[in-house]
Image (tube, rainbow, N blue to C red):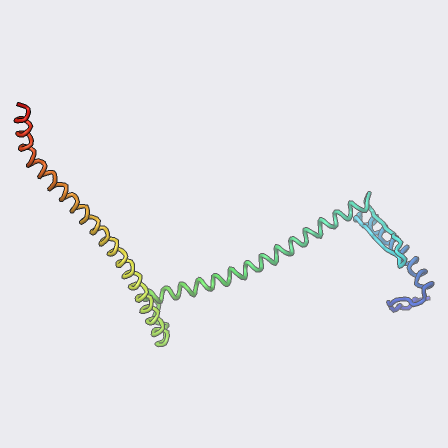
Length: 193
């Protein structure tokens, strides 16, 4: 007698559903045992009945050992997946940056006056505008720096002139002292006699 293919859907009759669960659970547990023995595989099977009763099978010494091994493997697989995704993202970013570098190098060569043969008139006008703008910015910065330097030098000159003036006054006062010194000496000698 040939068995027909049964449609897989929920069994509505509760008694039939319980009988089918028991038979298929036993068959599943038997297949898990056979797989572990025949193929020397580490097998763990956990089944909860519709009423919440636990049925389990483990080919190793403990279910926890197999579950720990599974969790470790699942974490490694997740890390590997994340690493592959990260590497793919880095490759994409690298390619994008390499393209940008090539564009910047081509622009730099054009600004230096190299490889202008391939440029259109419009591109040459744009290049000329960029160079004039850059030159204007450079001159503005240069004038700003020179003005600051001139201000500092003027301040330094002012300080040096003040110092020179005070030194000149000191020199004059010393010379008057020295000129008046012989007169004082004569007066001191006369008073001592």
